Image (cartoon, rainbow, N blue to C red; front, side, top):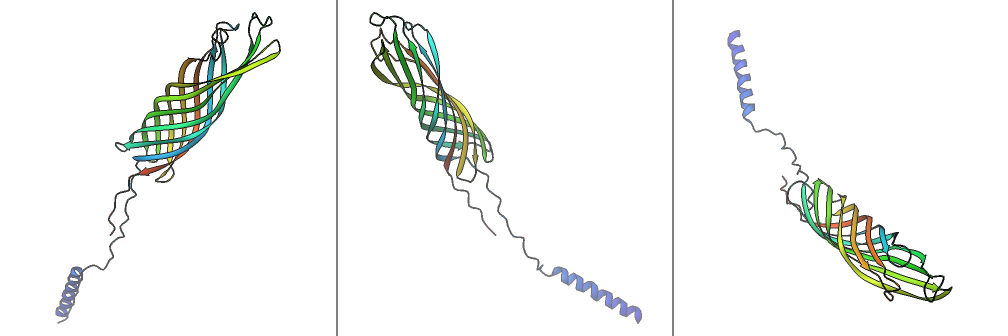
Length: 253
């Protein structure tokens, strides 16, 4: 009898366990957390920058007692830029960009000419040269690491150069003349950008401009056969707004 009772209790316990295993679980489903979408550099952007322009200008002459003279121009620059990026994969970015910069880079040089028919002691001349603005249209290629982008940039560049000449003969001032020249050349450089938010992007950039040489000669050729060769180095920091494509919609559970 005792054996029968124990067997009945054991059977009941086993049946209860099997029945409990068949019941639906009351454990709640885990909360779904959507993955953070990867940052994309694709999109249009518009920004402003500020920095410094450091020019190297060579003046050449065949008659003033010197063959050439170098001037190091420098000044503050600032402007804006606009462009478009396209990110081909996780790391490779191509783009196009245009910019316009105003500058205050200028420098002057004074010299005395050899004796002239109307100035036995020579004429005292001061020439001042500078760059008023810079503009360019460039291609960009870069490698991105999530929100950081390292890029190279280069293309066609334009500038407005100004030059003036002031002179005195026998201590008497006899005028100032100036000329403005439209310059064309190229620029190359590189920089790094970082996206602080999905839309706001900061940058630090170096750029080199070369405009070859051009003839100043604002006066009679016999008096001012001056030629100028100009290049400009710039360093700037900027902040842009990236109009990126909207992030994909992720279902929530």
